Length: 109
Image 1: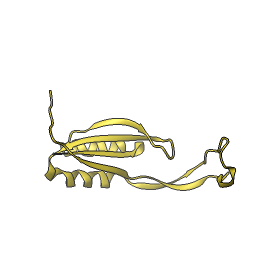
Image 2: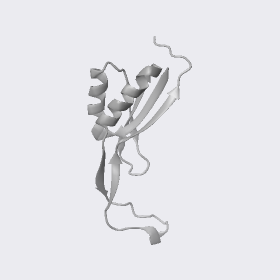
Image 3: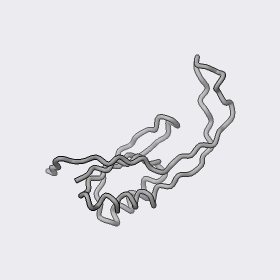
Image 4: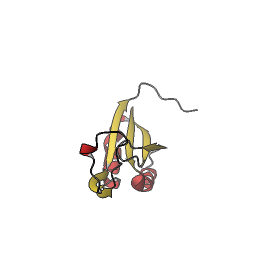
């Protein structure tokens, strides 16, 4: 058995949740915040048998797309102003960061 932990952008969370339900996969959704953009993310915890890992990864890949976004940088408070860029920059957001962990035992009450 495996535990899939997928961190995705909030914009993709409903689409992924619907796709998981349509394929009869159960998941727990957690609100999380990214460290780089300080933006909202959703973390999915999905427990599956070993042979179900690849189908879940395909669903995540299909429903969590990377995109470009303009972000305004945060000014340094007492930091090094030499590296501060005062205008918005384009960064890639979205997609998914996925961890697959072995599960020794699972109980459901």
